[in-house]
Length: 330
Image (tube, rainbow, N blue to C red; front, side, top):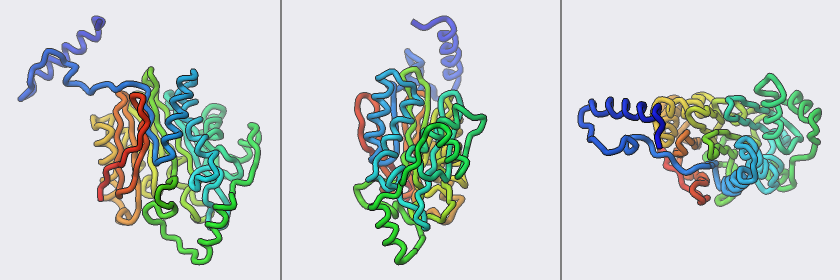
């Protein structure tokens, strides 16, 4: 039963709608409002999103928080040495050094990130400690490593033999021109993992972690650890995360843009598409690059859009965890 306040709010809204031209009267105002989806919902980038979503859901079912859920989900991907774009096993830079970036945001608008972190397998967990234990948002390089070691993390070699061999093969030509999903093989793991979710109480959180572009310039940092670029969460509105060529995302603050568009009435799908179109208009290099956005709003609605065909994402909703091919601009 609606309480008095909610009844008055809906009655007022119905009165305003009835004055609009062409408004068709209905027995219920609910039909004119966005339908609230079953919660929780998790949406994440690429095919490694399937196991990540599953873990996130299990964490919630075990009594963990939404922040616990997104952290543990992407940690599992960081822990997989066969994944050449995240955590241990990630492709190194052109100097043969693996450097990692990550960010995390919770429902209280707090955020933490690390960038250019070496020798620590779980940058997402270091990012969470930055969020919860420091007055800062981002720590970088040697400072991030020092902070990690002071908090009990152990150094380890992140360069696997497989990634080392790929780097040696690249060295023969040393051709650096990142193309669409260029560092990946078909049907294998792709790029960054970004994951956003909402729990049954309507609280949102997100996490993003990557080893960045394979064979990048030493010192390069992408969009993943930059709040508002690779990841943004606003518990009043929704959450978004990005994947692909980080430079294009940074130039438009893509994830923040998606959330702000949702704030102004766009659905998650419309917001992701508009953010991609913004890149198309602003950056002529877009025609040979790939960027993908995924988004989730407070009602549990989701959306995704990419520059090029080939981007897919995992959606866990209504007891189903499935891969979906994103629509694209080109």
